[in-house]
Image 1 (cartoon, helix red, strand yellow):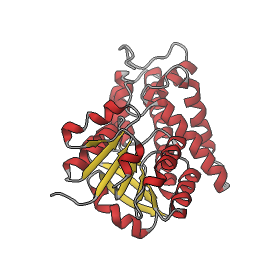
Image 2: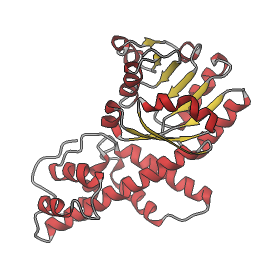
Image 3: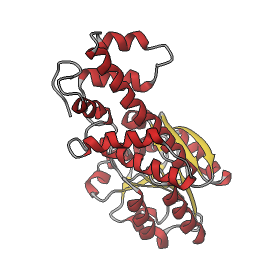
Image 4: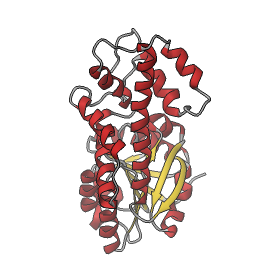
Length: 299
C-alpha cells in the first residue's frame, strides 16, 4: 500500500536508519536528512529521498520526525525548519529529551500554527529493526490520531498525556531499566562471590518474580562480558540526569535514581559508548578481586 502522507525523517543514526526503513517498507514517502549526508544517502537504495538541508527535507512534509541525540539538537533543527514547514505540519520528536524541552518545542510550534508530539521510544536497535518499539506519545488526541497508523509501522504506540508526557513515560522506563541493570549486576556478582554458579542462578530465578527482559538479555550479556553497545552508558547517564530534573520539577525525591546516576557517573569517562550493562564493570571496581565470568571484555 502506498500512503499519500509525506514524511521527513531527521536523524539517520543507529535508531533512525532502521526506523526510516520501516516507514519506507510500509509504503510511506520518506525524505531523510542527516548532518553526515552519506548516512541519509545510504537509504536511497530503500526508496528514500535524501535532502542536503533541513529546510529542503521538511518543505513538503505532512509529518516531520526527529530522532536525535538530545534536546538542544532538536531545538536547533526546529528553528532551522520553521519557515519551511507546511501550514499544518506535525512535528514528532522521537528523541529522548527533557520534559521541559518538549513543552518548549510544543509552545514554539503551536505559536506558529504548527503541531507537535513528543514520542520517545524504548526497545533499542533490535526493536527498531523489527518494528516492535514501545512508543510513548505526548500530545493532543487529534494530533495523535494523525500519526497512530504511522506509529504502528514502528511498534506499539500509547498516548500517555499532553505534550511532554511522552518524555515523562520514557524517563520512567529508563529509571526502571537503569536501576534493574545495576540490581542484576549485583545479584550475579553476589552469586559468584558466595560460591554459586551465576549462570545457574540466573536460570533458576527466571520465571519467578525476578524475571525481566533485563535479566533475560542483559544478564546474559554480563555473563558473557559482552558490552558492545545497544543502549550506551553516556545515554543512560543523560537519561538519569533528565529523570532527576523531572523529579525536581515535580517536587519529588527519588533516592534510588540518585544512586543509579552515581553508578553510571563512575564509569562514564572510561566506558562512555559501552552498553549500559557495563554497570557490572562499575560494580567490579567497588569489589577488587571479584569478576563475573572468565572471558575477555567486549566493548
